[in-house]
Amino acid sequence: MHKPSPPLSEDELMLRAWQIAGATLGELAQEAGIACPADLRRDKGWVGQLLEWHLGASAGSRPVPDFEHLGIELKSIPIGYHGRPLETTFVCVAPLIGLHGITWDQCHLKHKLARVLWLPVEGERDIPVCDRQVGSPLLWSPSADEEQQLRQDWEELIDKIVLGEVESITARHGEVLQLRPKAANSKALTEAYGNNGAPIKTLPRGFYLKTDFTAAILSRHFQC
DNA sequence: GCGTGATCATGA
DNA sequence: TCATGATCACGC
Figure 1 (cartoon, chains in turn orange, red, green):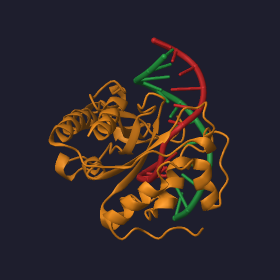
Figure 2 (cartoon, rainbow, N blue to C red):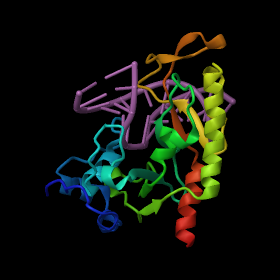
Figure 3 (spheres, rainbow, N blue to C red):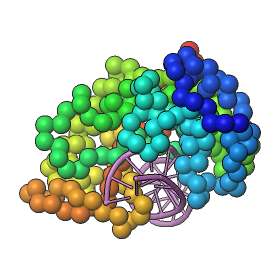
C-alpha cells in the first residue's frame, strides 16, 4: 500500500481514523511495509509515526500541525487495561529565553492544543507491540474550563522561567501541565535565564499534559 | 542543538 | 506501584 495523501477535509481525516480503529499495530505496519519492533525501548516514537503514515500527516518534523491546512494535531495516547492513559502527553518544547511580552493567546502551546485528534492505542507492556489495538478516534478542542486550567499552569510556569527559576521547577508544579526535561540526554544543554537574569545553560524542557487531564478528555468521550 | 515522535526505568 | 527525571531515534 502506498502512503495515503493528506486528507482534504476534517470528515475525510475522521473517516480514515475510524477505518483504522480496531486494527492492530502489526496489521498497520504490514500495510505500511515496515517491521514491527518487539518493544519500544529504541523506537519510542514508532507508534505515533505509524499512525501519521496511515492518516496522511504531512508535517514531518516541522513545527506545524500534523494536518497543516486542517489545523489539526495528531496525538497517539497509550492506554492501560483500565482505560486510563499510561503516560503523560508531550505537547511542545518550552521557550526558555526571549519571552518578553509573550501571552497565552499567542503562545505555541495554546495553538498546538487548539484542535487535537486523539488516537488511543493499547500500551500495556505485556501486550506485544504487534498485537496492540488502535481505539476510537476523538477530535477534541479544550473546553472553557480546560483552557483556563491550561492557561493558569502555563502562566505560572512561564513566570518562573522569566524569573530565572527554571531549575527549581519540577514535574509537580502545575495542575494539568508539567514542565519536564525534553532532551537527547542529560548532556544536551540550552540557554535559559538564571538568577538576576544572567544566562545559564540548562536542560531543554517540554510541556506535558498530566494523565489525569487526558484521562478526563477520554472519559468524557466514552460517556457521551 | 532543535523540534518531531514519545516511552523507559528507577527512586520514593 | 507510579510519577519523575532521563532517555531513544531521526532529519536537518
